Amino acid sequence: MTVLWDSGSDTFDALYPRGAYFGRVARFGPSNLFDLHPYVNWSKNGFFLEIDYDAFWRFSTRDGIYNPALILTYPSTNDARFIAQQVGTITGWELGPYIALELETNLIFPGAFLVESSLGDTLFHAVLTMEVRF
Image (cartoon, rainbow, N blue to C red; front, side, top):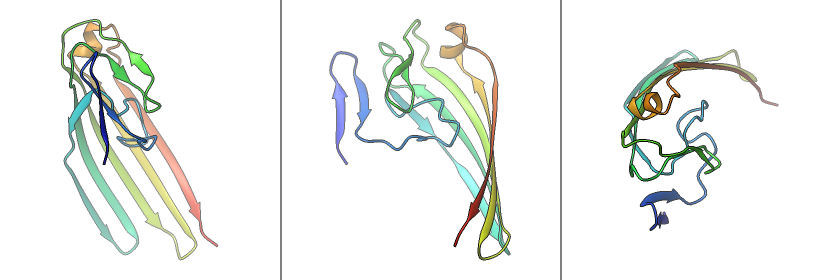
């Protein structure tokens, strides 16, 4: 894996990250942040459940937060390091050999960086997908 650093802001730059790096919500990209992301999952008879928690911090307080396309979305307006915490679930069901359903939900609670930047709204996001294989 290649790791690039922006020497002007001490920002980690993930080379070619996938779009939704931290779940399908994709509020934050992988630049200038580190996270703690424990999860548990369980599956039985075609049913799947995953519950996860993710906490985000800025690596450098001299730089802001980027979206998944690595475009600066939240500029650095304060010295707070803690960005947010996210609680999510993925529930899936294999209806047979050709059809699968999946529901992903995420709740994002803003941390000090977002609150002090006047971006302190709690967000809820849900995605329902159906996969058809043939």
